[in-house]
Figure 1: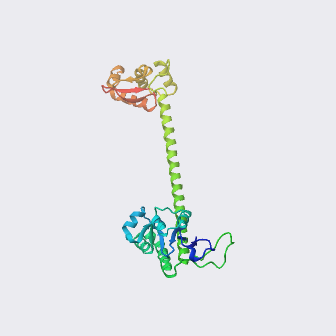
Figure 2 (figure 1 turned 90 degrees about the vertical axis):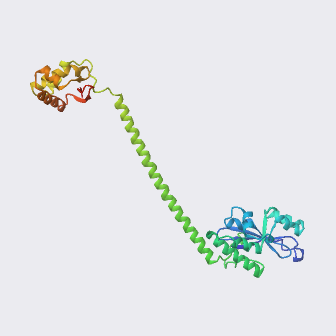
Length: 309
């Protein structure tokens, strides 16, 4: 934080300096700039917007209305007219100051700073308080030049107060920690996106498998041109019909299975074969166990429904 002296050229005498003198104060911790306008009478005025913005106020006029007495404020236009010289307007325009800006004097600056209670504005408030105290005591504000100066083209270097250096270091540490946290969060987000993508791919594969299965011919449909006798011969060759009773029950079911499905009550098969219901039941279980057929459910009248596997 230092004072940039943007006064008139050095060949002008003090008696000739009837325009407004403008200086910039810079808060080294953040680079915040506070401009000071000094009238020929030695009165200091400050653009309220420079201070209000650093104190966290969203609206400068509201900040002035809440914290600063009216007698300690004025507009830059009124201040320039009070000086009454062409140099004043030129000097103001050269520093990018607008005539509509609200200005505060030292007392108004003190009231504006003290009116802010935000903890994050405390370092800036402390700095402004030091500037005010120095201006009231010495009439100017500057820092001690550093022992080693850079090249003339670079400008003058100043000694930075230790508390400001500490504040900058803490701020940099917080920035580094925030960068690390953001990087970690980005990594977690990328991992989550990869997991979501993998899940979507697996789901798509499963849906394709289901679609292909639905397009395949149903197991219950008979092979083209398959007859009941061919079906029985196939079962014999594969040694699936282990007893005569099983073969007899299979012979009852084969014609219907060759057409698509067989629907028979145990009682009906027993009546057609002359076998007991228990024996028919055992034979049916054997045909199911050996994979000759499979049961898909029951018909409306309760008869088991069998189809080829």
